[in-house]
Amino acid sequence: MVNDARGTLLEIREQVQGELTTYLALQREYLGAIGSELIPVCDALESFLLEGGKRLRPLFAYAGFCATGAKPTSADIRAFTSLELLQACALIHDDLMDRSDTRRGKPAIHRHFENLHQSEAMAGLADQFGESAAVLLGDLALVWSDHLLHTSGVASDALLSALSVHDEMRIELMAGQYLDVREAGEKSPSVDRSLRIARYKSGKYTIERPLHLGVALAIADTAKSKDLINILSAYGLPLGEAFQLRDDMLGIFGDPSVTGKPAGDDLREGKRTVLMAMTFERADPATKATISAALGREDLTSDQIDEVRALITATGAVKDVEDLIDGLLSNALTAANSDEIAPSARELLVELATSAIRRSH
Image 1 (cartoon, rainbow, N blue to C red):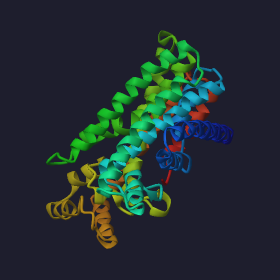
Image 2 (cartoon, helix red, strand yellow):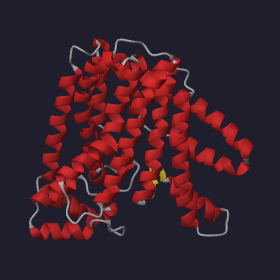
Image 3 (cartoon, helix red, strand yellow):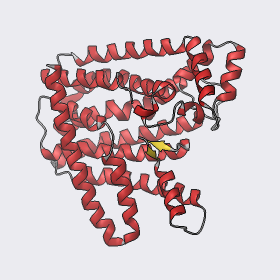
Image 4 (cartoon, one colour):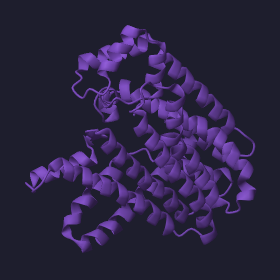
């Protein structure tokens, strides 16, 4: 059964890829008509969107739609695909705010355009040009996400229903991102604050809200879908938090050849994650001092990163986060097997949950 679900998800992933390819080709034609200077923008966004990504958000939207017992049309697939463009906006801006050099093994968008400025020997500051371009390309991806949803071809009542979820999802995302930025300025880490950031910055817009979007597209009458929405939240919220916790673990312990980011990148960026908050709760003063001195240092060597990793592990925080992930996953899987969810969708939700949490990148 799980293999059948996996095969179905692979098919939908390919359809999403096709819709993205078609949409970006249309936008290339539109922007190219404005000016040839915009072709590098098209190239960069096509590379960013088409040469990587797990398509989790459209897949969760698909699963939410199927949870109603309905079968999505090609117009619905296009609507699900719009979530990839929202994801692109979030990643481009996140990399800029974190001053990340890479994404998926390639230069982050702001670094890409900084390099473009230098290679073309343009006037002005290369880093300023790269940062400005990243802001604008992130904004463009956000506008495109709206445009693709609006022009997907879904019925007007379904679109109106979906827009309510879509708006709330974007507000939550921006709120979570601000909380993440602010956290870097807090005097001490906090597990509770970091968990809230994990929920709003990543978890809700990755899993819970895409599920709700799928339901809204299938059932325009929110009163009829209320019970199903609640069940999907019971699945999506713990899974979303577990997803971000796994991301945090990979940010410090992930294999660069798999994650596409340098080893220990979150340490260099000084990210205040749940893992780091738990580490500081459990560490002795000497360990705290060593880790604090390393956090946010861009010149950390691989040996220094290994030392910090060992200290984090020795506090027991890694095991505690893994246990927390397992508990959250268990809660999500229990909800996925609820009678309110169409049987075929239960298999999809179980497969999505395990693949999202057991991933290595």
